[in-house]
Amino acid sequence: MGILRRYADIQENVNLGQKWMGGKMVLHPGDKNMQAKEIPIDSFFRKIVMLRDRLRVLEQRINAHDVLTDEDKINMQQYITKIYGSLTTFNVLFKYPHEQFVGEKGSKD
Image (cartoon, rainbow, N blue to C red; front, top):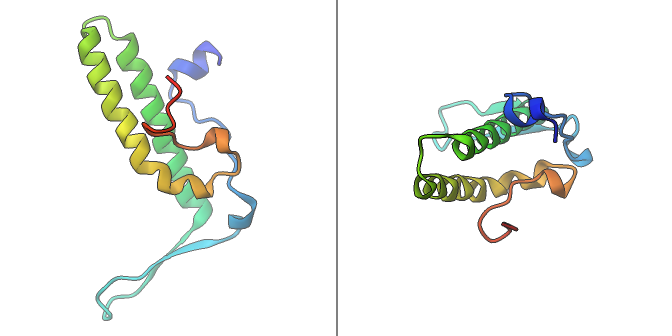
């Protein structure tokens, strides 16, 4: 991974799964007097990818921080890993498995 790509807030090109192309997400409120909200799934997917990329940048900045102790870095890293785990629900949207969220169980480190 290049230096700029690794430390900058640059979003990489991530592909939406083919079956979701042109799709929409529909949110139905519990209150029947309210209207449903439709969101193009590719717009929602871009937001998920932005979130993932910003978490990665945060993770890198924590690891490179020169004032935090190693224990602080580990504690924050564990918390970020738990966030990734919470986001694995959205993995169904990703075209390639290597671009998906990985939580504690799937961590290779």
